[in-house]
Length: 341
Image (cartoon, rainbow, N blue to C red; front, side):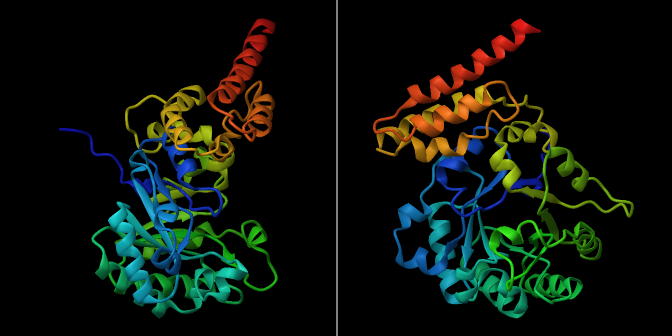
């Protein structure tokens, strides 16, 4: 019999505005075939009334891929979810964690932590509309809320509506006084509270997000704690984006897939057909290469790799020859290192 692999939520890459676009996801998929990938947050009204192909279009190679929606109107969210599933998304996720001013003014994102029943109503509408998993990504609370109350209230209300999977950013969001960037670093992490949620709600799938720097930390968070309880998944954000080569180890280390790691050079070869196809469609190289800047992090020639992609990819007509020069710079730097050893 084939070996049963862990579900996709075991490891996922966080939805990140202006970062996890379709080109980023296709690149990340070249490094891991198992990780669950997420879109940037898209508001329900934008999905309904906007340019759907621009907002929702993606390549088949990206699967499994989840659509993250923003909004607080159950009817709108249900319609947007249906549209997303028609496009082929494998999951619909509701953003209950973004702290930006624009999101607050629209009454969605992290401010929904104050309205757990509204979140539940939104999730009930989404679940009724689609036949793919409907999930929630939330914070542990906002502003002066007691996280032990706000997190459990949000989760329990949505669980009553039939939601079984929650991704918890283990920080409060301070909607008054901190910028979105500060909200990713300043509020203290409380991994213990997320573990407690899993311990007290063992029937739910609980993934953790926030401050996870590498796969060693991810493995530690997935391991059973002193109480014997293990979280179901980890979600990496900035670490996965800024040092994407770590994704090449995910399938072996976290999914036990029995497959060799994908190194940076192989990932580039896997990404080339996608790059070629998009270049032929008129997509600028820079819009794809920008997601690769951290790929050679820690290797000889990494600085030259970044410089070539940053400076040359923006030139009119730039093509794969720019990427080849960047790769050659790394190979030459490594050859010099080996000769000097």
